[in-house]
Amino acid sequence: MSWNKEQKSVVIAAYLGWTLDAFDFFLMVFVLKDIAAEFSTTVPAVALAITFTLALRPIGALIFGWIADRFGRRPTLMINIVCYSLLELLSGFSPNLTTLIVLRALFGVAMGGEWGVGSALTMESVPAQSRGFVSGLLQAGYPSGYLLASLVFGLLYPYVGWRGMLFIGVLPALLVLFMRTRVPESPAWTATQHSPRVGLMASLKQNWKLSIYAIVLMTAFNFFAHGTQDLYPTFLREQHQFAPHVVSLIVIILNVGGLIGGLSSGLLSERFGRRWTIFWAALIALPVLPLWAFSGDPMLLAAGAFLMQLSVQGAWGVIPAHLNEISPASIRATFPGLVYQLGNLLASVNAPLQSAIAVRHANHYGYALAIVVGSVVVTIAILILFSRENRGVDMTAVSEMEASGGTSVETFTAPQACRNT
Image 1 (cartoon, rainbow, N blue to C red):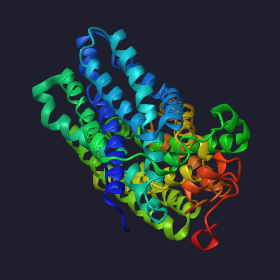
Image 2 (cartoon, helix red, strand yellow; image 1 turned 120 degrees about the vertical axis):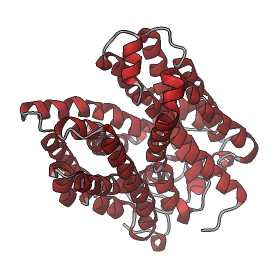
Image 3 (cartoon, rainbow, N blue to C red; image 1 turned 120 degrees about the horizontal axis):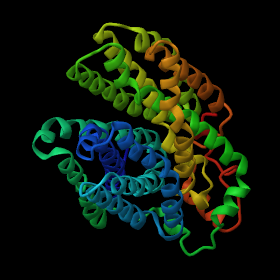
């Protein structure tokens, strides 16, 4: 892979942007109990703040995506990072639960914008043959942020408390200084910045079939991620009664599997194509299900968690490149993030769904996890076969042709020799 200095800076900035976004989100997850104690309420009441964070992410994807498509990826991403960092800081000053929930809802808007804008800037900037690896690297930012939050919690929480944890969350704003001096604008956006642009609604209307398909696909993907992550610590603590340090170790191993899976599948997608890499990565989860959900030994459960996230993030690792390559060029900063976050919103029922299934089966969380994840894996494997494959598409050329009223991404694809359909 041959990258110039500017392309390396773009990749670093986008990876850190998503890593630190996830870091700020997961800091809150670790201190729900402490917040509830200070505000004399319950953990479920505080957890409502997380619900609002997730629910408002599509609004952020729409707002920041539209701004990025109109005014550029780089300045929008900088504003986005400052917004979520400051909202994290302000959350630490919350005098009551209501204020905290409002601030976390606004944080959700900012969080929802980062992924789509950052992935568009990156995929439009790096060489086409590098998109697979970079896609896996970007998606690896999510488990990286989770790991970083875990380390901060373990090392600093006893000294700074829950408010201090959130104060630390302002640090990602420093990334803007790096972006201000080192990161250039996307060449695809620069090439068409003075050209007439198709409006957001008009473009979505023209591509309504693709939009609906992508939202359904991303709903399944978000069920795959949340279905394997959200209640897994509860499964380990409630069903197996493991001590916190055992749960923590399994979660660390889980995230290592995710990191390896995302990076590996991104590289493999350059050789075997986006669709088939997603197809086989997702199917790995099926034979892993018994080990992951029905083992009793912590070592076996850790192995199952590692392999499951190898599958989950293996499938997810291809998504940033795939969604950007099939996106209409005029809304490339909006489309991937919007369909991703709408899918996330629709999949937000996962935790209540799995909990309800577990309760109906004598609190057997393993059964609940397995039934949901098994169903979703089959769904993804079927859906992805109906997707387009635009691996290696020249994004700048597509942007220029769409701006001039020419061929759209639906038909303007890479040479057949560079594709695997």
